[in-house]
Length: 301
Image (cartoon, rainbow, N blue to C red):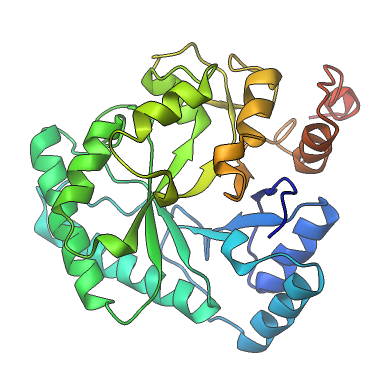
């Protein structure tokens, strides 16, 4: 892989166009990385994977020299490993996560981003224990798969676990198959959790006291609508939030994480227009444009 900026965005996976549609959207955005959900993140409906479509999509990735390691899959939000008050629901989350790992393996990719979960009044300690128990079962039941779960840093909204690096370390320490666990940094979440992103190298120094940087498999590059420490988790477009363009640009081009794919999850303009092509271009040009979305904003909502 070259020293070129590794940048992409979330792209929609639709049953008709499948992975090939995801790759084509990525190329239209002039990106060299992408992230997708294998189905709607809020429900369990999943279409059968078209293997011929996957073959065609991978050929396009190879033609455009996009490494498979730059393709990230995100697990659905409905998986909650932290709460075990209702055993049936907890077991459902385990089974569904196993199914998602199997789907990622069928696609032939390596990274699955996972929100650790919310303890829902069970308490942080109990929630972490529940996550560890669930991950150990999932990883044992999928031990022949090469898919690595990337635990995402969370904003701390409600009873979310993963709002601190210490909490992620506790989970990591309890997992038996540590080679199957990594970390996904989310800049909006880190800001909202209370971490200072304006000095990213200082944050990375702190992170390295708990984990080697090699465990970071993905960065969600998002601005935030909120002040640091708000615990709200509201993403904003690049440069238009409280983190600001210069801070995010430095993170995107940080030499220590040069080869880690950066994925945009910023909001659509008027909930209709994708911001990604313009945001990616702005990051490549290294210059903030405050009127970037004026044309879309003027259109009827």
